[in-house]
Image 1 (cartoon, rainbow, N blue to C red):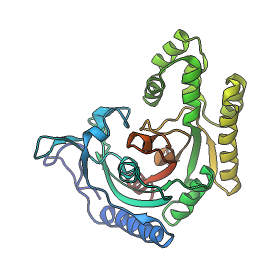
Image 2 (image 1 turned 120 degrees about the horizontal axis):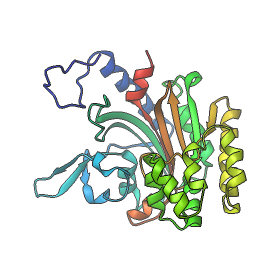
Image 3 (image 1 turned 90 degrees about the vertical axis):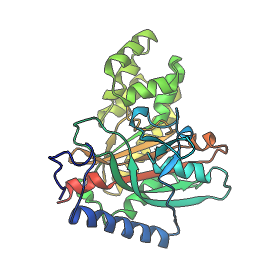
Image 4 (image 1 turned 30 degrees about the horizontal axis):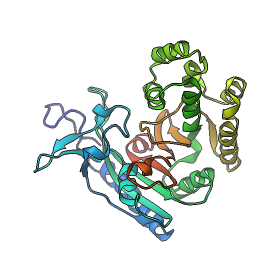
Length: 307
């Protein structure tokens, strides 16, 4: 139950919880972290605040979503927008493969009067420098959360940031520009880019969703995309083989710009509760490149669909 805020006693977008809405997510987190630790993951809890300079022009496509504040010495700080960024900052100088688990809150501004909270509880896993295929890591995360997630209702979509990256390269467009416009689903700007660069596939990216998207993309994509499309298809088939409902979304980018390979989202009743993917390029920002893959589960959204 969410306490009402009719008198405006707390800021818009923040909520006070009680009873099940407090207890159930905490039980999920504790159960998940205990299982992860038993399976050999290192459980971490990074600080709530980080230097804003770590994230400026790096992660969120919409930087107005950061919660910024000043420290005691006047430094510009940011409330944790994402665990993956903090893990990369912490482990960038390491050498040994690592498996990391976390659970806690992230903070991002949401649109005014949207009804969406600025604080979201989540849990997740990160694999750094592992050798497993991405589709196997997706399966591992789903197995780790099977006591929480109602899999009969879960619908997954698989894409690849490499598709967008390669199209940007082929068309001669700055990759971040294309990814940002695509992430914001700015259809008019995508049509303008497609026309300016004589590359019709750009305007079609947001609509390459569902099973028909695979053949449509194969027909129009350059040869350079063939192996990337194959990887997505193999991943979808693998997840279907273990009984999951899976389809394609070649236009998905996520909220962050650090993804560099396969991406995955998962929804129940139209609410996105799972996100993740490969993000090898992120670690180089902190000084030492490492291979990395991660997935997270949004407990706020999950709590809304589990009665």
